[in-house]
Length: 233
Image (tube, rainbow, N blue to C red; front, side, top):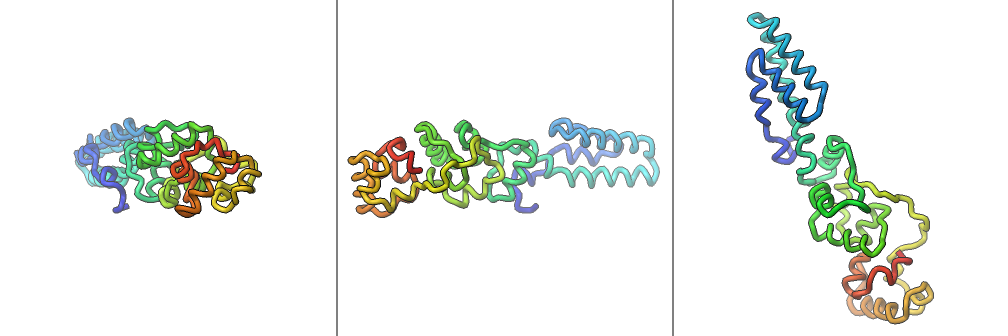
């Protein structure tokens, strides 16, 4: 795990305290209490009591060595648990580790901006785009919509998949797609329920500057609210 974030690789102070003979097991008790790992508390107490009983002989020495090895082997797990909300999500593996130790996922449709920025480690520009789209009544149902509707790069979404959930995740109509805004003629858009002026603007902008990259791109380039074409998404 050498490529873990720096704040996870850092050795916490309690690990160094575990090196103390006899009473070093109490460092595991502390770590278990802070990270809410009850098994660590019992393990630390076991090391402490055993070290006290067998202090001064070879068994006590072996217990001391086991205590140190155990503490160092658990430090990354401890750091992941206590820092789970403050880690840089550099790849999918980190996100998976964070998800396992955080014990919860972030609902894209109800998350606050802080959850999106700090919980998912999303750049604030994408958090703002998600909020903007939600305010217009759009409900995200899949990772693909984060890419196609919110315009978030696919790699960023893919890396964070283990941390993401949707309050509504089954789309009722699999035949609809915002990409029709790139292919429909002005007449087809009007027939699909878009107002004539809006349909003309969508087509003219598309002809002038090329296909739209996402729904947020449609909104930015045309200035039309999402409500004008939400039924096509």
